[in-house]
Image (cartoon, rainbow, N blue to C red; front, side, top):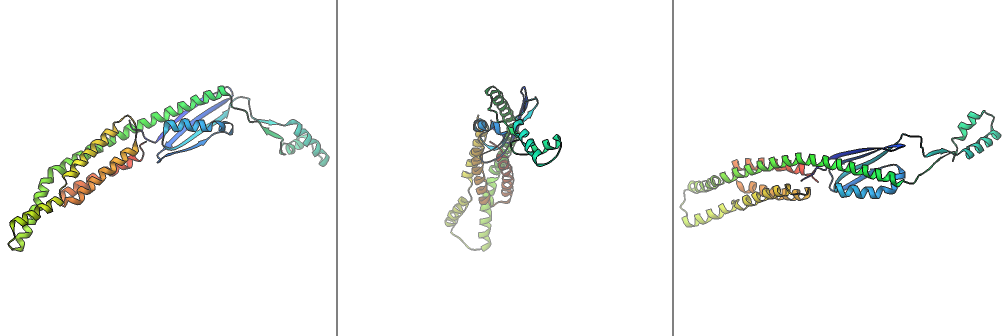
Length: 285
C-alpha cells in the first residue's frame, strides 16, 4: 500500500513533575531529511531517536520536536547560596545599600545560579520512548490515509489513460488510410505516370515509419505494470516514477509519429493526465 510523505503525529506524556509533548511532521523529500529539536538533557538519546524515526518513516523532510513543561516543584536551576552570600559581603565593602539591593546585584554575578544537568532516568526514558513510538504510529497512519487518497487518484488517471489509448487504437486504421490517401492524391496531382510496384514499395516504407504498433503495446504494458506496482504491499514512489517516465516516452513517440490531428489531440490529453500523475508521485514514499 502506498504512503504519502506528508504526515503529522503527536503524543503527550504526563510524568510526576513534567509534561512531555512529542511531535512529528513530514513533507516530501528525495531522501530522509530529519531535523530534531529537544532539551539538551535528552541529546544523549538523539542517535537512538533518529534511528527509530528513520526505520519507520524512511523518506521525507521530517521535523521531530520534544517539548518539556515542568509541572511540579522540581527545577534544574539552583541558587548557589554560598557564592551569593560571599558576593553580598564583598559588595558591602564597596557600596552602601540595603540587603535587597545588594542581593539583586549579587544574583546577576557569575555562578550565583547553577543549572544541574540530571542524567536521564531510565524509567522516564522508557515512557518517553513509548511516546515516540505512539507519535510514529500516528504519523504512519496519517501517511497511509493520504496514500489511499493518492492511490485512488492514480487509478482514475490510469483508467483515463487506458481509455485514451483505446481511442488511439480504434482510430489508427483510419489514420493509416488517411496517410495512404494523401500520398495517392499527391501523386495524382503531379499528373505523371509512376511505377505502381515502386510506388507501393515506397508507400509501405513511408507508412512503416508512422507505424505505432509497438508503442501501443508497450504503453499498455507500462500502464498495467504501474497498476501492479501501485497495488503491491510496499510503497515505492521512486519505482512508480521510473514507470511513469517510460509511459511518457511511449506517449511522446506516438505523438511524434501520428501525423494525424485527431490522434494528436488524444496525445495532448494523455500528456496532461501523465503530468498530474508525476506531480502526485513527488509526494509518494
